[in-house]
Amino acid sequence: MSIPLIVVAGPTASGKTSLAIALAKHYNGEVVSADSMQIYKGMTIATAKPTKLEMGDIPHHLIDFVQPEQEYSVAEYVQDASRVIADIISRGKQPIVAGGTGLYIRSLITNTQFEEIETDERLRSALYEYAKTPEGLEEMYQYLSEIDPQSADRIHKNNIIRVVRAIEVYRLTGKTMTQMQAESRMQQSPYGPIAFLGMDCHDRSVLYDRINTRVDVMMQNGLLEEAKEVLSRENMPTAYQAIGYKELADYFMGKQSLEEALEHLRQSSRRYAKRQLTWFRKEEGIQWLYREDYSDEKMLVAEAVGRIDSIFGRK
Image (tube, rainbow, N blue to C red; front, side, top):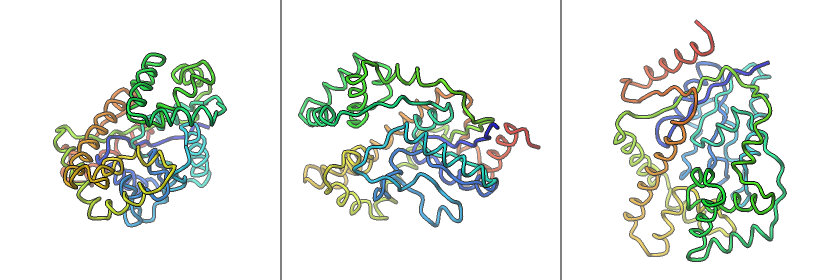
């Protein structure tokens, strides 16, 4: 049996969460997060996890369930999300996948089956240690660009976790991540039809204003205190990849003023939004909803419902 799936994707601060919750209410659904940072416990404000008030009575899955010091792979996400979706369907409800991590979403809906790869803790530790040297990460990213340019295009040069993992896989298997992913798409996807909606703004300044406002709200909600606590922990490479923490590190070390650090955070968020849009623009079948086209949230939701019903063949 093919599973009908609703997907709500898009850049940070575009309104994915509110739309997904509204659709869950309309379709008697539950939300399955596709966010690679919201999975971690204790990293709440910076990752913009929906609050209990925002969630209302809509169940949300794959949020706040992994310890920050643990690594969590896209292969694990596909397994966990598939299990959760099957459970939602078994209870007669509609799964709604929502988030901004494009690799998670693509791997899930294409049913990518990842080959089991053993880890080498000594190799991984050595790579991490080298990445922490002044020129280490830059040289490692250059090496990745030479052996696997496609992965280098997908991975930000400062994402130490993914750079290390891509090199580790190549060293252990002799295959690049790109090659392994191409070989892994062997099984037919159980999902379809898929209503794949993308949130965006016609005017990029509108999206950037929403990002700036989000940073202000995060500060009001205690981002500074959360960042200080998270950054004080040891053995948490993930924290330094989450936008909202690494930008404040220089402030805590006295290298920047608070306003300089916050401007760095706004800039990092805008750049991340650009990368997300670049990814999602390449996805097949995505239907875009632009915030400026709708005078209020009700009209936006109504348009989304109309498109979903059309894709699902409903009147």
